[in-house]
Length: 504
Image 1 (cartoon, one colour):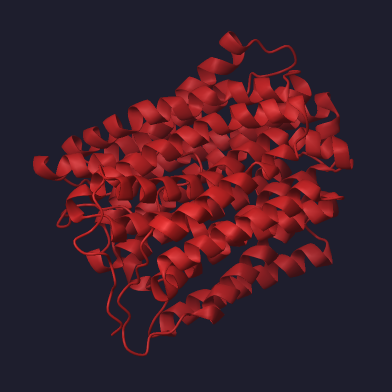
Image 2 (spheres, rainbow, N blue to C red):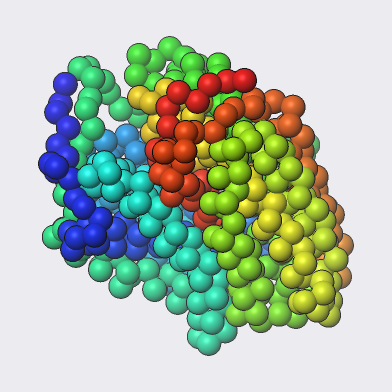
């Protein structure tokens, strides 16, 4: 075995060394969180500048999510094997270069390709940020450090649309990518000087499952292309059908490889646990609703309701703010009564909020037509996210905690990927409809109601399938609460959850 090399006895949170480590990880992961939210606000301007259709805007979002989802597990494994700081810094540098390519893109096709490259960088830096915190900080400070990382990351997510909207209105959407360059330089300087290098223990003979990673990435790419292009080409088109079939076969090959591999990326045995499987099903449905909603609402606000980019970004600010305030409280509630009720009621409430947002139309008044739906939607998500993630983590053996959280994060990314590709098709939105306010508004209403139905379905799945589990002991509750991450981007990649939480 290769020995683990954490600093002993570990960095303390209140020291300058601890603050430097926290600053590097927060700023690094914050870049990925910012881009995940800000790009949706910029979509109408991107479409206008490039004369792009709706399919191109879908790919502007999904190209990033595709490579991130497909390579996230591999990125975490590379960090554990090669060094978490090394892979984290490589991801930050890669993300910055890809951001420059996004900002300079002369065509929408180049922008989509650069967004895919951004996703590769994010897949390296995102798992590394929390892995560094867990490995670098002293055990007694780890929960507080993760809580600080979570809260500051949530603030970045909340402020992103505001800052991005201002940049788009004041200058150009290209600035939302260029802002990553100075941030990346700061992160690289801090990490090189102040972040200790750590590695995980490796079993003798263990190898990276590169074949599995390729099968997963290609399968997701083929499936996403087929679902996205179905709107323009039709479901009967040979290329669409071929892509969907190829995607299904490649993903089936990935599952088969995981079943046979001695060192799988995803140990399939985890899915024998009802709580783990049910929670990931809820994750897929609820984060699909979230992804589709956050794709459609900013376009509707700008193209139909006449909001500026800054106004649209500001309109979404309460969504993250409510989650920042109430997610930890929802986590405490779930500890007392078990996760089933919060995970069941939360998505149902979120579905009501999305249904209220279907009223947004031309001349929509923010206090009457937009804010109520956003607040209800945010309240439902707040009830859902922390109990959901805690249930996933408590359902996996402690030795597989990192894998379990990475699987859940990947499920959330794939859910958004599929929803952004499929929901506009189901809503009847054609490639050019976003340029026609009346046509887009008709499809928007259907799409948001479909998203509301997905969210409600997540609640039903939780009530039927999620086991009722007792919360952790009071002494453990504070540490668990600090781990509740309420970023809109995705659930946390790693989380310390008390072991021994029994099934009902």
